[in-house]
Image (cartoon, rainbow, N blue to C red):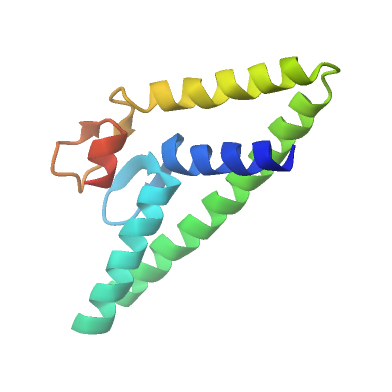
Amino acid sequence: MRGTLLVLWVVLLLTLPVPYWAIEVGLVPTASLLALGLVTIGASIVEGGEVLPLLALVLAVQSIVWTAILYVAARLVTRRIGRRRSILTQRALATVLVCGLAAMSLFDVYRAPFSTSGPRTNVLGAFW
């Protein structure tokens, strides 16, 4: 079940919309929030000032918190799936969950104010 935990956690990081606050409020995957934080850290190193480092800190803290929350959620779900007696049932449940999250991410369920594709977008627009 360790492999299932890792796959589920990564899929949650890449697809599950989580709320965040930076300059605006948004709803993006944790991986997108982490990427935005890393870009902001880079910009604060190059540009300096007082606002960018503070914004980078806010984004980094939110990324770390959501990463931990999603790990705990993945662990709880994996433990629940692991209670099934049949290995076939365990694999089927994990596959349905991962495929469901992947399918959901293709719809406009994210709100990414900094996206080039508009405020309501799918997972691809949340990263661009």
